Length: 439
Image 1 (cartoon, rainbow, N blue to C red):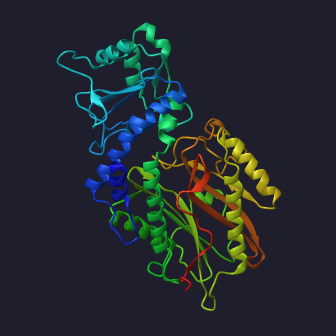
Image 2 (cartoon, rainbow, N blue to C red):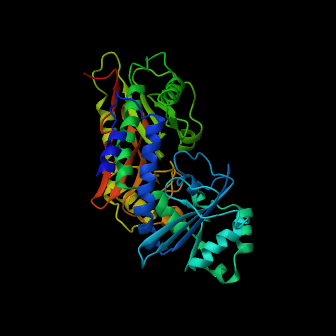
Image 3 (tube, one colour):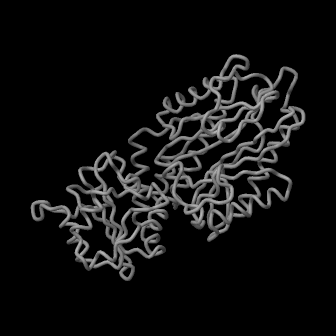
């Protein structure tokens, strides 16, 4: 209880308060990490059937999984860092060992005395031999780059020293590594709620007259304001933001243009529908958010009804999609059922949702890609598990006779799937932001 209260104190946030100082951030990160190692990891190893997991990495060439395991004061691995996790289910114990010269934070103890055994690889083999695991999980994966962290030289060196009787036990840690990357704890979800609020607050300020002066401000001005705002707050973006415009008299851009080559430096004018794609990193978690705003004309007090209805269609696609979440269903199954249902209602949906968490494009079930609406081989075949977060990313294309063109409503919000079903991590946009803001 004491830890939880301290934790809630550390992560408390309002739009007027300061982001945590580095020392406070470190305390929160290490508290979360300790909980994950001691309480989450044993559950995940039992669920996936692994009793030994070995993570091998070298300084400045870190395994992406290893980076999520380092304490707050370790910005990189040191020399060659080898972590060994051994789960004894019968005794209900988990050993967290480092074949390294140092303890790795408070949770992982150094298990290598170089003076007694100068060879690091032999020290590792001693650990394996004494425990005689049923499986030896290593981070290599065909479909997930995040989980393909062991480099060729380390893999070959490890296999060369591994005794022959253990070699058949070496297998991909993919299922365990996915589970580690994708599963969120209660503590992390407290952080996530505040992180999404920070993201929404920044967008709200960007989409206001504090930043946008119609007729003068360009889309690039807003993009760089977002970058500078995040830097000034002591945070960082995990991708370069984008801001784009849809307006009467201009053809709807294709997905290829929309995602990779948006027109730069367009002046924002009254009557424009503007859209941003923006995400930040804080306390090792990531957000990914897309929202829309309408620039009011001089004689308008609210957006045109046809845009209001178009936006409602986007929310409806969200509702259809998230209603099809079900533990055990694959990403491809959820995708195809949602698209079928949306089209049956007369909508024109496209769904390209990805796991979100320790990485922006994280590990777990891929639920469509913008250019793979028939399903995604490999990552789309992975099933949905509880206590996972997704960027609910999708769009619907809506004909707008008043503009003599189609409009694409592109939405993205962080959503959580848990024991009680689906919920947004911290609400979603349900109506257009207006600039100037309506009273």
